[in-house]
Image (cartoon, rainbow, N blue to C red):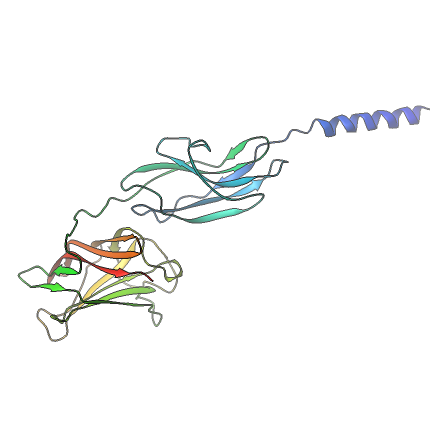
Length: 264
């Protein structure tokens, strides 16, 4: 009889434990922002635990003020257990944002670590005439008649996507090289010239580039932009603009103007 009573008591206690499980909000991790440009950044995170209840959605939340929640701006990327880390081109230039990863279950919303980031400024100049580049230093202004795009893959220092201009009236050819995820066109932002190894699928989409001029048979010849030189990209409405604002190419040229390429 005592054994039966003890067994009955254990069943009751176990039943109470099952009924009193403390379910939790999801446990999530925010990834640190990467590749912050003028209107974009790579953001994301992952779900560590559902908290005992199914996660109905997870994604990112952001705001211009601290501690963003699902009541501010949010983009859902999935449900249950998962992760996301991708480019979001949704921001304003020269603005500080706060963001974190979130997940929602029946109990509520769980949030990862909060990060802040500041987007880049717009280009400091706004050339009116498209496909027109002033070469500076008393040189002529050239009209750009065509832009050729290629995907270099034969060495370690050309990046993985490049744009080269041509002109019917000039021997000057301007080339810009980028090293982007999946050989995609560069995003809107400020790009800084680097020298040395640049490519081979390393250091992708970091706001770095190469810039040089070829001028075979023409004065004052070719030139390479020095490390640290800056120029600008505007990628909008399926058109890519390369913008120069007093951009020196060695000591031979000072470029002002812009050229464009219609994206496929």
